[in-house]
Image (cartoon, rainbow, N blue to C red; front, side, top):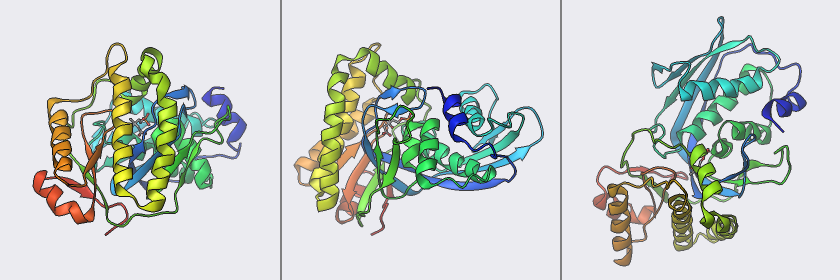
Length: 331
Ligand code: PMV
């Protein structure tokens, strides 16, 4: 099924653009990663995933209907060329909503307070905020579940950025993807900390979309990934229910390294790590051997996200000066 067929079957004919709207959505960090699609058109995943949202770090997006033939897309104060990858993705996503009004152009303004495209999941918060803004602009009154389905079509991980706290994306089995959406978990974890190490904030050359496709098509190792992800997902649910930090940290770290192993085993190989990424991993393993409860995860980029609890915050900050720390559930 292609996106246009899906939208014509689903979007009410009354969907008419009118209002300006503005929304914020948080970035999210996956503890069990989404890596690989079973349907590239609708962004349907091979495995379920689980993330934690980053509270105040994310994207604020404003949409305004404008006169004119093309969308005007702004990112962090700079107008993007209409043929840029970013503007094309934004416009293609808006096309899904204006299916009955293709003539309607929009000005889209996004401000990220996280580095763009450096493995810090800014496309997730951006598409989640844009989905909420489009919902208002077209007065659709979609439910949270429907918003999550729509955001998923912009960027898979965006379906999790609709919610705060721990969020699970259920992979679903349906061909139209209506059962593939994210839900917030009830549990919270006061004192849980995510620390962001900025190894490199330059835009990566192979984005997640291309990277996961290459891995799925060329890495034999990828065959074991769906099984590992399913096992990790249930261990993480257990860790969260029992507030077992060692289990949470070790499962998240192994899950991330397993995902990276499949990337490295693809062809041409995909290695997002830089020397500073490896140095940080080795430092974390040494500190852990010395008794510090510190783990990491990383997405398709060179930056590490540290996982620790509030009780260790002073010790971690002393080892990683300038670390940006987020406490998604407060102290
Ligand atoms: O949503 P995408 O297409 O940007 O893919 C995200 C992939 C990872 O960040 C590596 C994993 C995840 O679950 O967020």
